[in-house]
Image 1 (cartoon, one colour):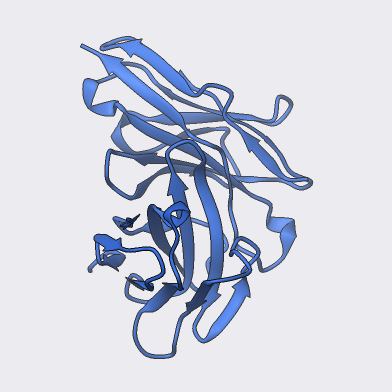
Image 2: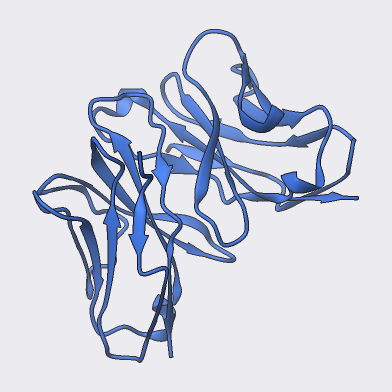
Length: 116
Length: 115
């Protein structure tokens, strides 16, 4: 069955330090992978996606993610965290072999807290 | 170009009343998705619609919940005879018809409180 796992409910990091938010997936085909961010009392915003090509994907607000096929992972990273990065982060995957159903499979989210 | 518009942003209902949540997708988008979010449960898919068609309603409760996306006007998520357990944030998202890359654009959500 298709699934996405975000193994950490919460990640705490000091401002200025690098951050990583983990995501692993399980799909039958080659995945399309996404990261979204949700600030308090707001809707989700798209950060970045991997469809094909270079395994390192750069996105909004200085975030990047690395697709690792052998480890079935798509971890979100940022070299230097900001307090304003504190938010809820969601990983999602779509199996393009699933036909016309464009439903994404979502992780449960990871709460990132960046401490000043 | 306006984003996904949801209204009302906040809705309070008493048990047994009806709740209607509206979603206008981004201009040019013909695919609409509804999600429910509870603090400890993450984002739960409810239903996926295209104009005048329900494509996937596998996440919708079998009773009291319905959704539509008419040819003209916004998509509507309707909850009849609300119960306290329906209290949640409901998010609508849209995507460009024909695109295969799955990027969704979300509204700000409608927060339903059932008293």
